[in-house]
Image (cartoon, rainbow, N blue to C red; front, side):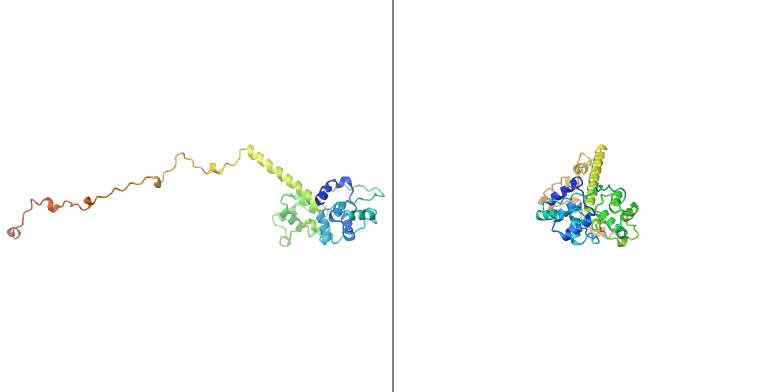
Length: 268
């Protein structure tokens, strides 16, 4: 059911018209009916997480519910039919008067005075969790200016110490569907940028070489180290050479030496 609900958002504008004051209608349906979050989200043009946030009291806390039966947008039989079948979709009742379709909004989003002090928190959340979004997209989502976004990016905002990143959907500054749409566009743009950089790098020949090629020795002959030279084999020592009598000066001229005589010693 959930995947079918997400797919049905694409044909929401062509198959049916969203009710007037969709969040106020969603508040009333959550409080007064047993419809599922997906049915309410599809009928009101919201994201199921937004409807869940309304039920938990995190979103649209100050919005008063509007009865779609009293203003002729729904019938009680239609609500009972969808309550009995969780896969059924709510259908708007035939309008008694022609209501022009809403024109797409251009320019930055208007932020109420009560929410303007929370804009830096929403900007900080978008900058931290969706860095692929550019300043123009963030400005359209939360209704702010590029200097404010840049001051939060480089942490030069005057109140940076008190800024706490908060989801702009939870703060009611934008819908989950709008946020998902901008994130999907930014992801595609980043993917195209990466492919373009890869093509330019391949065109300029800036291809990374294999690590085995860059770490190989440039010389053809390997260096010879002392460990590579063969050691001399020690020759065995003969015992006869060690203990042989070496010639001395005393025995060399033994035949020529004569004994000393006393008269030669004390001869004046």
